[in-house]
Image (cartoon, rainbow, N blue to C red):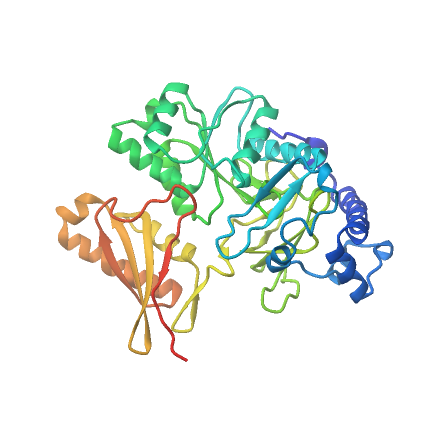
Length: 434
Protein backbone atom coordinates (compact mmCIF):
# COMPACT_ATOMS: atom_id res chain seq x y z
CA UNK A 1 0.00 0.00 0.00
CA UNK A 2 1.24 3.50 -0.90
CA UNK A 3 -0.14 6.09 1.49
CA UNK A 4 0.30 9.18 -0.72
CA UNK A 5 0.84 8.01 -4.32
CA UNK A 6 0.51 11.60 -5.58
CA UNK A 7 3.90 12.32 -4.00
CA UNK A 8 5.54 8.92 -3.45
CA UNK A 9 5.38 8.04 -7.17
CA UNK A 10 6.19 11.50 -8.56
CA UNK A 11 8.00 11.97 -11.83
CA UNK A 12 11.63 12.90 -11.11
CA UNK A 13 11.48 16.24 -12.91
CA UNK A 14 8.32 17.26 -11.06
CA UNK A 15 9.84 16.18 -7.75
CA UNK A 16 13.00 18.22 -8.31
CA UNK A 17 10.95 21.31 -9.23
CA UNK A 18 8.94 20.88 -6.00
CA UNK A 19 12.17 20.46 -4.01
CA UNK A 20 13.64 23.63 -5.51
CA UNK A 21 10.53 25.69 -4.71
CA UNK A 22 10.47 24.40 -1.15
CA UNK A 23 14.22 24.96 -0.74
CA UNK A 24 13.87 28.57 -1.85
CA UNK A 25 11.05 29.13 0.63
CA UNK A 26 13.07 27.52 3.44
CA UNK A 27 16.16 29.62 2.72
CA UNK A 28 14.08 32.78 2.78
CA UNK A 29 12.51 31.75 6.09
CA UNK A 30 15.79 30.96 7.87
CA UNK A 31 17.61 34.04 6.51
CA UNK A 32 14.89 36.25 7.96
CA UNK A 33 14.05 34.45 11.19
CA UNK A 34 17.07 32.45 12.42
CA UNK A 35 20.00 34.64 13.55
CA UNK A 36 22.48 31.76 13.15
CA UNK A 37 21.69 31.32 9.46
CA UNK A 38 21.28 35.05 8.80
CA UNK A 39 24.84 35.63 10.08
CA UNK A 40 26.23 32.64 8.16
CA UNK A 41 24.59 33.75 4.92
CA UNK A 42 25.91 37.30 5.34
CA UNK A 43 29.43 36.02 6.03
CA UNK A 44 29.35 33.81 2.92
CA UNK A 45 27.57 36.32 0.68
CA UNK A 46 24.57 34.04 0.15
CA UNK A 47 21.38 35.55 -1.25
CA UNK A 48 18.46 33.04 -1.13
CA UNK A 49 16.83 34.78 -4.11
CA UNK A 50 19.76 33.72 -6.32
CA UNK A 51 19.18 29.98 -5.89
CA UNK A 52 18.02 28.61 -9.24
CA UNK A 53 19.17 24.97 -9.03
CA UNK A 54 19.32 22.18 -6.48
CA UNK A 55 23.04 22.01 -7.20
CA UNK A 56 23.34 25.40 -5.52
CA UNK A 57 22.78 23.71 -2.17
CA UNK A 58 26.50 22.95 -2.11
CA UNK A 59 27.16 26.67 -1.61
CA UNK A 60 25.30 26.58 1.70
CA UNK A 61 27.00 26.08 5.07
CA UNK A 62 26.74 22.80 6.96
CA UNK A 63 24.94 22.63 10.29
CA UNK A 64 26.32 20.38 13.03
CA UNK A 65 25.09 19.20 16.39
CA UNK A 66 27.48 21.64 18.10
CA UNK A 67 25.67 24.52 16.37
CA UNK A 68 22.36 23.31 17.78
CA UNK A 69 23.78 22.98 21.28
CA UNK A 70 25.37 26.41 21.09
CA UNK A 71 21.91 27.86 20.38
CA UNK A 72 20.15 25.88 23.13
CA UNK A 73 17.24 25.90 23.70
CA UNK A 74 15.33 28.08 21.20
CA UNK A 75 18.01 29.93 19.24
CA UNK A 76 17.45 27.93 16.02
CA UNK A 77 13.67 28.34 15.97
CA UNK A 78 12.22 30.16 12.95
CA UNK A 79 8.88 31.01 14.58
CA UNK A 80 7.90 32.63 17.89
CA UNK A 81 7.44 30.21 20.76
CA UNK A 82 3.71 30.97 20.84
CA UNK A 83 3.41 29.16 17.47
CA UNK A 84 5.18 26.04 18.77
CA UNK A 85 2.72 23.36 19.90
CA UNK A 86 5.21 20.57 20.70
CA UNK A 87 8.79 20.32 21.98
CA UNK A 88 11.01 17.25 21.75
CA UNK A 89 14.66 16.84 22.68
CA UNK A 90 17.58 14.47 22.23
CA UNK A 91 18.96 12.64 25.25
CA UNK A 92 21.84 15.05 25.79
CA UNK A 93 24.11 12.24 26.99
CA UNK A 94 27.20 13.92 25.51
CA UNK A 95 26.32 17.53 26.28
CA UNK A 96 23.32 19.80 26.23
CA UNK A 97 20.26 18.23 24.61
CA UNK A 98 19.06 19.43 21.23
CA UNK A 99 15.57 20.91 21.48
CA UNK A 100 13.29 20.66 18.44
CA UNK A 101 10.04 22.56 18.03
CA UNK A 102 6.95 21.74 15.97
CA UNK A 103 4.14 23.98 14.77
CA UNK A 104 0.65 22.62 14.17
CA UNK A 105 1.54 22.21 10.47
CA UNK A 106 4.81 20.45 11.38
CA UNK A 107 2.88 17.89 13.44
CA UNK A 108 0.45 17.30 10.58
CA UNK A 109 3.29 16.70 8.10
CA UNK A 110 5.16 14.47 10.54
CA UNK A 111 2.00 12.42 11.00
CA UNK A 112 1.66 11.95 7.23
CA UNK A 113 5.28 10.87 6.86
CA UNK A 114 5.10 8.24 9.61
CA UNK A 115 1.86 7.03 8.01
CA UNK A 116 3.85 6.56 4.78
CA UNK A 117 6.48 4.46 6.57
CA UNK A 118 3.88 2.33 8.35
CA UNK A 119 1.93 1.78 5.13
CA UNK A 120 5.08 0.81 3.24
CA UNK A 121 5.77 -1.83 5.90
CA UNK A 122 2.31 -3.33 5.33
CA UNK A 123 0.30 -1.74 8.15
CA UNK A 124 -3.40 -0.99 7.50
CA UNK A 125 -6.40 0.23 9.48
CA UNK A 126 -7.08 -3.38 10.46
CA UNK A 127 -3.84 -3.70 12.45
CA UNK A 128 -3.14 -3.44 16.18
CA UNK A 129 0.17 -1.64 16.72
CA UNK A 130 2.17 -2.01 19.93
CA UNK A 131 4.70 0.82 20.26
CA UNK A 132 7.50 -0.14 22.66
CA UNK A 133 9.56 3.00 22.01
CA UNK A 134 9.75 5.50 24.85
CA UNK A 135 7.10 8.18 25.07
CA UNK A 136 8.35 11.57 26.24
CA UNK A 137 10.98 13.97 24.92
CA UNK A 138 12.30 11.19 22.62
CA UNK A 139 10.61 11.45 19.20
CA UNK A 140 10.08 7.74 18.54
CA UNK A 141 6.94 6.92 20.52
CA UNK A 142 4.83 9.95 19.61
CA UNK A 143 6.12 9.98 16.03
CA UNK A 144 4.75 6.54 15.21
CA UNK A 145 1.69 6.96 17.41
CA UNK A 146 0.16 9.79 15.39
CA UNK A 147 0.93 8.14 12.04
CA UNK A 148 -0.71 4.90 13.16
CA UNK A 149 -3.83 6.74 14.30
CA UNK A 150 -4.01 8.58 10.96
CA UNK A 151 -4.02 5.23 9.14
CA UNK A 152 -6.85 4.14 11.40
CA UNK A 153 -4.98 1.34 13.15
CA UNK A 154 -5.53 0.52 16.82
CA UNK A 155 -2.59 1.84 18.86
CA UNK A 156 -1.25 0.36 22.09
CA UNK A 157 1.11 2.99 23.60
CA UNK A 158 2.89 0.46 25.83
CA UNK A 159 6.11 2.50 25.80
CA UNK A 160 9.40 0.94 26.92
CA UNK A 161 10.22 -1.46 29.75
CA UNK A 162 8.32 -4.13 31.73
CA UNK A 163 9.04 -6.75 29.09
CA UNK A 164 6.93 -9.56 30.54
CA UNK A 165 3.95 -7.24 30.53
CA UNK A 166 4.72 -6.35 26.91
CA UNK A 167 4.49 -10.05 26.02
CA UNK A 168 1.23 -10.39 27.94
CA UNK A 169 -0.17 -7.40 26.04
CA UNK A 170 0.78 -9.06 22.74
CA UNK A 171 -1.15 -12.14 23.79
CA UNK A 172 -4.21 -10.45 25.27
CA UNK A 173 -4.63 -7.49 22.91
CA UNK A 174 -3.80 -9.52 19.78
CA UNK A 175 -0.99 -7.27 18.60
CA UNK A 176 -0.24 -7.55 14.87
CA UNK A 177 2.54 -4.97 14.54
CA UNK A 178 5.52 -4.35 16.81
CA UNK A 179 7.40 -1.04 16.78
CA UNK A 180 10.73 -1.29 18.63
CA UNK A 181 14.49 -1.17 18.43
CA UNK A 182 15.99 -4.33 16.85
CA UNK A 183 17.78 -5.26 20.08
CA UNK A 184 14.55 -4.97 22.06
CA UNK A 185 12.72 -7.14 19.53
CA UNK A 186 15.23 -9.91 20.29
CA UNK A 187 14.92 -9.24 24.01
CA UNK A 188 11.18 -9.76 23.66
CA UNK A 189 11.86 -13.04 21.86
CA UNK A 190 14.14 -14.16 24.72
CA UNK A 191 11.47 -13.25 27.26
CA UNK A 192 8.83 -15.15 25.29
CA UNK A 193 11.06 -18.24 25.44
CA UNK A 194 11.38 -17.85 29.22
CA UNK A 195 7.60 -17.52 29.56
CA UNK A 196 6.93 -20.47 27.29
CA UNK A 197 5.09 -18.31 24.74
CA UNK A 198 5.06 -19.67 21.19
CA UNK A 199 5.38 -16.88 18.59
CA UNK A 200 3.17 -18.90 16.23
CA UNK A 201 0.31 -18.51 18.69
CA UNK A 202 0.51 -14.71 18.53
CA UNK A 203 -1.07 -12.47 15.92
CA UNK A 204 2.20 -10.72 15.00
CA UNK A 205 2.72 -10.02 11.30
CA UNK A 206 5.08 -7.03 11.12
CA UNK A 207 7.94 -5.50 13.07
CA UNK A 208 9.15 -1.97 12.33
CA UNK A 209 12.63 -1.73 13.80
CA UNK A 210 14.86 1.32 13.97
CA UNK A 211 16.76 3.80 16.16
CA UNK A 212 19.97 1.73 16.06
CA UNK A 213 22.27 0.03 13.57
CA UNK A 214 21.39 -3.60 12.77
CA UNK A 215 22.42 -6.18 10.23
CA UNK A 216 20.66 -8.50 7.78
CA UNK A 217 21.57 -11.39 10.07
CA UNK A 218 19.77 -9.69 12.93
CA UNK A 219 16.75 -9.14 10.67
CA UNK A 220 16.64 -12.86 9.86
CA UNK A 221 16.82 -13.69 13.56
CA UNK A 222 13.94 -11.33 14.40
CA UNK A 223 11.81 -12.62 11.54
CA UNK A 224 12.44 -16.25 12.43
CA UNK A 225 11.85 -15.93 16.17
CA UNK A 226 8.87 -13.55 16.10
CA UNK A 227 7.35 -14.84 12.83
CA UNK A 228 7.14 -11.36 11.31
CA UNK A 229 8.23 -9.34 8.31
CA UNK A 230 10.81 -6.96 9.79
CA UNK A 231 11.47 -3.62 8.09
CA UNK A 232 13.99 -0.89 8.81
CA UNK A 233 13.12 2.76 9.27
CA UNK A 234 15.17 5.89 9.80
CA UNK A 235 14.66 9.03 11.83
CA UNK A 236 16.83 11.42 13.76
CA UNK A 237 15.51 13.58 16.59
CA UNK A 238 17.30 16.74 15.47
CA UNK A 239 15.62 16.66 12.05
CA UNK A 240 12.17 15.24 12.82
CA UNK A 241 12.20 11.71 14.23
CA UNK A 242 10.72 8.66 12.48
CA UNK A 243 9.29 9.33 9.03
CA UNK A 244 12.42 10.49 7.22
CA UNK A 245 12.83 7.13 5.48
CA UNK A 246 11.56 3.57 5.69
CA UNK A 247 11.61 0.23 3.92
CA UNK A 248 8.69 -1.17 1.99
CA UNK A 249 7.93 -4.89 2.00
CA UNK A 250 10.50 -5.42 -0.76
CA UNK A 251 13.14 -4.70 1.91
CA UNK A 252 15.50 -3.37 -0.74
CA UNK A 253 16.55 -0.09 0.85
CA UNK A 254 14.84 2.73 2.73
CA UNK A 255 12.66 5.12 0.70
CA UNK A 256 13.64 8.70 1.54
CA UNK A 257 10.75 11.16 1.72
CA UNK A 258 12.41 13.50 -0.75
CA UNK A 259 9.50 15.89 -1.07
CA UNK A 260 10.25 16.97 2.52
CA UNK A 261 14.03 16.43 2.74
CA UNK A 262 16.87 17.24 0.37
CA UNK A 263 19.41 14.42 0.61
CA UNK A 264 23.18 14.47 0.13
CA UNK A 265 25.95 11.94 0.78
CA UNK A 266 29.34 13.51 1.53
CA UNK A 267 32.83 12.33 2.35
CA UNK A 268 32.86 12.88 6.15
CA UNK A 269 36.52 13.90 6.11
CA UNK A 270 36.65 16.24 3.11
CA UNK A 271 32.94 17.27 3.03
CA UNK A 272 33.03 16.83 -0.76
CA UNK A 273 30.11 15.02 -2.44
CA UNK A 274 30.58 11.26 -2.37
CA UNK A 275 30.80 9.42 -5.67
CA UNK A 276 27.55 7.70 -6.78
CA UNK A 277 27.09 4.49 -4.82
CA UNK A 278 29.88 5.35 -2.39
CA UNK A 279 29.36 5.14 1.37
CA UNK A 280 29.45 8.51 3.08
CA UNK A 281 27.76 10.70 5.65
CA UNK A 282 24.07 11.45 5.25
CA UNK A 283 23.29 15.18 5.10
CA UNK A 284 19.70 16.44 5.27
CA UNK A 285 18.07 19.77 4.50
CA UNK A 286 14.48 20.16 5.67
CA UNK A 287 12.14 21.53 3.01
CA UNK A 288 8.87 21.96 4.88
CA UNK A 289 9.71 22.38 8.59
CA UNK A 290 8.30 25.64 9.97
CA UNK A 291 9.49 25.80 13.58
CA UNK A 292 12.90 24.16 13.35
CA UNK A 293 14.25 24.15 9.77
CA UNK A 294 17.77 22.86 9.26
CA UNK A 295 20.17 23.51 6.39
CA UNK A 296 22.61 20.75 5.37
CA UNK A 297 22.49 19.01 8.74
CA UNK A 298 25.32 16.51 9.18
CA UNK A 299 23.64 13.48 10.71
CA UNK A 300 26.83 11.54 11.42
CA UNK A 301 25.15 8.44 9.94
CA UNK A 302 27.00 6.52 7.23
CA UNK A 303 25.09 5.05 4.30
CA UNK A 304 24.90 5.17 0.51
CA UNK A 305 22.20 5.83 -2.07
CA UNK A 306 20.95 2.87 -4.10
CA UNK A 307 20.44 3.01 -7.88
CA UNK A 308 17.25 2.17 -9.75
CA UNK A 309 13.53 2.18 -9.00
CA UNK A 310 12.05 -0.12 -6.36
CA UNK A 311 9.63 -2.83 -7.48
CA UNK A 312 6.99 -1.35 -5.15
CA UNK A 313 6.45 1.59 -7.51
CA UNK A 314 7.77 4.37 -5.29
CA UNK A 315 10.10 6.72 -7.16
CA UNK A 316 11.88 8.34 -4.21
CA UNK A 317 15.59 7.56 -3.84
CA UNK A 318 16.46 4.71 -1.52
CA UNK A 319 19.31 4.57 0.93
CA UNK A 320 21.03 1.48 2.23
CA UNK A 321 20.49 0.69 5.91
CA UNK A 322 22.84 2.75 8.07
CA UNK A 323 26.26 1.12 8.30
CA UNK A 324 27.20 2.98 11.46
CA UNK A 325 27.95 6.40 12.81
CA UNK A 326 31.13 8.28 12.15
CA UNK A 327 31.52 8.53 15.94
CA UNK A 328 30.72 4.79 16.43
CA UNK A 329 33.70 3.69 14.41
CA UNK A 330 36.62 2.36 16.43
CA UNK A 331 40.20 1.82 15.33
CA UNK A 332 42.25 -1.26 16.19
CA UNK A 333 45.88 -1.32 15.10
CA UNK A 334 45.14 1.31 12.46
CA UNK A 335 42.09 -0.48 11.02
CA UNK A 336 38.69 1.23 11.10
CA UNK A 337 35.84 -1.04 12.21
CA UNK A 338 32.09 -0.57 12.76
CA UNK A 339 30.13 -2.74 15.21
CA UNK A 340 27.68 -3.61 12.42
CA UNK A 341 30.53 -5.27 10.48
CA UNK A 342 31.32 -7.48 13.46
CA UNK A 343 27.63 -8.28 13.89
CA UNK A 344 27.29 -9.30 10.25
CA UNK A 345 30.08 -11.88 10.67
CA UNK A 346 28.66 -13.25 13.92
CA UNK A 347 25.17 -13.62 12.48
CA UNK A 348 26.51 -15.63 9.55
CA UNK A 349 28.03 -18.36 11.78
CA UNK A 350 25.80 -21.22 12.89
CA UNK A 351 25.62 -21.64 16.66
CA UNK A 352 26.09 -17.96 17.51
CA UNK A 353 23.41 -15.43 18.47
CA UNK A 354 23.18 -11.67 17.73
CA UNK A 355 23.91 -10.88 21.40
CA UNK A 356 27.48 -9.65 21.62
CA UNK A 357 29.77 -7.03 23.07
CA UNK A 358 33.12 -5.74 21.87
CA UNK A 359 35.77 -4.91 24.44
CA UNK A 360 38.87 -2.90 23.54
CA UNK A 361 41.95 -2.87 25.77
CA UNK A 362 45.73 -2.56 25.64
CA UNK A 363 48.49 -5.15 26.06
CA UNK A 364 51.55 -3.00 26.53
CA UNK A 365 51.71 -0.69 23.50
CA UNK A 366 49.33 -2.82 21.40
CA UNK A 367 45.58 -2.84 20.98
CA UNK A 368 43.64 -5.90 22.07
CA UNK A 369 40.12 -6.54 20.76
CA UNK A 370 37.79 -9.16 22.22
CA UNK A 371 34.30 -10.16 21.11
CA UNK A 372 32.05 -11.72 23.74
CA UNK A 373 29.19 -13.50 21.97
CA UNK A 374 26.43 -15.73 23.31
CA UNK A 375 26.29 -19.20 21.77
CA UNK A 376 23.60 -21.87 21.62
CA UNK A 377 23.36 -23.73 24.93
CA UNK A 378 23.84 -27.19 23.37
CA UNK A 379 27.05 -26.02 21.73
CA UNK A 380 28.63 -25.04 25.04
CA UNK A 381 27.36 -27.98 27.09
CA UNK A 382 27.27 -30.99 24.79
CA UNK A 383 29.54 -30.23 21.86
CA UNK A 384 32.73 -28.81 23.31
CA UNK A 385 34.92 -29.72 20.35
CA UNK A 386 32.44 -28.18 17.94
CA UNK A 387 32.32 -25.05 20.11
CA UNK A 388 36.08 -24.72 19.82
CA UNK A 389 35.79 -25.06 16.04
CA UNK A 390 33.11 -22.33 15.95
CA UNK A 391 35.34 -20.11 18.05
CA UNK A 392 38.27 -20.60 15.68
CA UNK A 393 36.10 -20.11 12.59
CA UNK A 394 34.76 -16.85 14.01
CA UNK A 395 38.25 -15.61 14.77
CA UNK A 396 39.42 -16.39 11.22
CA UNK A 397 36.35 -14.88 9.58
CA UNK A 398 36.66 -11.65 11.53
CA UNK A 399 40.29 -11.30 10.50
CA UNK A 400 39.59 -12.26 6.89
CA UNK A 401 36.71 -9.82 6.45
CA UNK A 402 37.74 -6.96 8.73
CA UNK A 403 41.53 -7.24 8.85
CA UNK A 404 41.61 -7.26 12.66
CA UNK A 405 42.62 -10.04 15.06
CA UNK A 406 39.80 -10.49 17.59
CA UNK A 407 39.84 -12.81 20.56
CA UNK A 408 36.50 -14.62 20.61
CA UNK A 409 34.84 -15.63 23.87
CA UNK A 410 31.73 -17.81 23.70
CA UNK A 411 29.27 -16.99 26.46
CA UNK A 412 26.25 -18.75 27.92
CA UNK A 413 22.84 -17.39 26.99
CA UNK A 414 21.59 -14.25 28.78
CA UNK A 415 24.98 -13.44 30.32
CA UNK A 416 25.44 -10.22 28.33
CA UNK A 417 23.48 -7.09 29.15
CA UNK A 418 20.16 -6.63 27.36
CA UNK A 419 19.05 -3.14 26.37
CA UNK A 420 15.49 -1.89 26.25
CA UNK A 421 16.63 1.19 24.32
CA UNK A 422 19.58 1.50 21.98
CA UNK A 423 22.17 -1.24 22.40
CA UNK A 424 25.68 -0.24 23.48
CA UNK A 425 28.01 -2.64 21.75
CA UNK A 426 31.51 -1.30 22.40
CA UNK A 427 33.35 -0.97 25.71
CA UNK A 428 36.66 0.82 25.19
CA UNK A 429 38.96 0.36 28.20
CA UNK A 430 42.05 1.63 26.44
CA UNK A 431 44.12 4.43 27.91
CA UNK A 432 46.53 6.33 25.70
CA UNK A 433 49.50 8.11 27.21
CA UNK A 434 50.76 11.26 25.55
